[in-house]
Image (cartoon, rainbow, N blue to C red; front, side, top):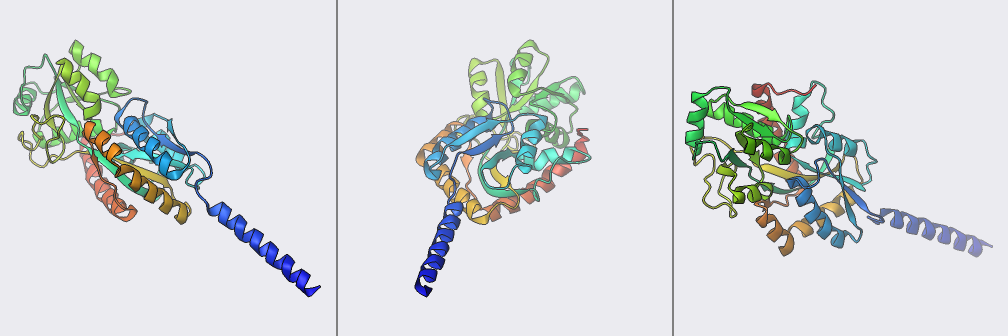
Length: 323
């Protein structure tokens, strides 16, 4: 009888162990990657490159779910309020995690406390462009033109509080010029306005900007990072063009909600790093004018804190607000 009881206890223990092991196997179904911006934008393009390759490492499909709105804060809030099981993750950006929350009197989320950082995937400079009919052929000439016509030149963006908006605000602050911000629901809507002459200036990422630059209907005057980019080798950095201290790269980072199981978070971080360092992904990013980062969660968290400090100052000085 005792031996039978021991067998029953051992069997129950084994079944429990197998159940726990099964529960810890991650992922067992599709992972949803929320992209808080429209289809076809830089974040969407990059996220789909990562999702396709990450599916191979995770052994489950990674589904991109576009949830645009409010400068990326709507989709980000969706992830914050999701079940913290690592099956819903976010491809966030400078806009969602270093700028957006500082625009609200009551922020929709805490960009640091409400998320578990996975990795900073990549960074990309913005391209500063002017409409073809603008007479300025260099950034120095554009600054002179803006100073001669304060409040007369308009710069478009993909929405109030986006990184493209605040890149313009940073230019205003450092160059000492008065140009007027006009928000749109995506930069794709700004280009026709540049053709018509309603908008003179726009910041956008290289993969979106390049086709328009090749058409000759807009002209690049500078890139916002610390070095020139391979896809636009003749375009100087904004610092080279005369605006000291200008640095406004757009970064892309992957996040899970706060308080997710650490083993699952570690699995995601491991497989995402494997993904972004593949030759295929690196080549795609280079074609987009983006650099692979692939940082650890701890390094990403430190970077995130510093970037929040930087952009909160820009937001404060600009007076930008969302009610």
